[in-house]
Length: 298
Image (tube, rainbow, N blue to C red; front, side):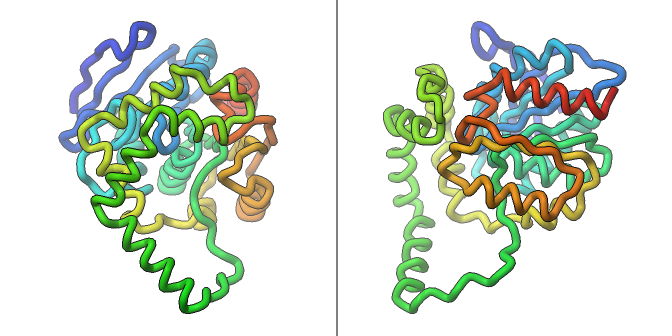
């Protein structure tokens, strides 16, 4: 496996790592410290290393910081694979072994949080995990009620419809429009001024890559991954959960209670932000990550 350095933007340098014959993009900043673990930042669905630029700029002053584009996103390759938490777990695990060379604290937002949990559940050497509005299903405590036959038939038909290539392609073409990206971001950010032209472009640009539509379509075809409570039952490291209270995509209080129920080595904070607090209120998030990591590593 090889790495070749190149300039990603005029202000940021990134590197490509060869994984399973595909190019994977990552960024490294800061210096390694003998008594502090490195940090590995993992973006959410549709995101990339660009979404962490405000965090990298500050955290690199005290930590060695890595950020990676999951396969299928950002500047990484977008092969026609079956995308799943298990695939990203394998990618991150190999990246830690082959490139970082030391167990990092995993910091994940949304889908990246779920991928980070998958890694920590299978690797006892991970020193800690930070989740920001993390995605992933819990095992239902009560089986959901059986829908009426007509509704069940409609749900089955809708699922089939969205699995059709033409339908998913058309939906992808609609959702990747800059105006739609902006409106979506403005719904999930409390501070609308944080939704900048650059942020919209950072999300739009990878959608133009070959294979991007296929990655989007895989969302409707990939089997659901391991339940979060099962993953938490396999973890042993400290866990920090940061919740943007204004997230319209998840019931934050309910998910917070589920995490506390299934994991006792947990510290949590509620933040005045939406689905992506690391980008919306980066200074607050950076300070919380810094204090928490230094609290158990020094």
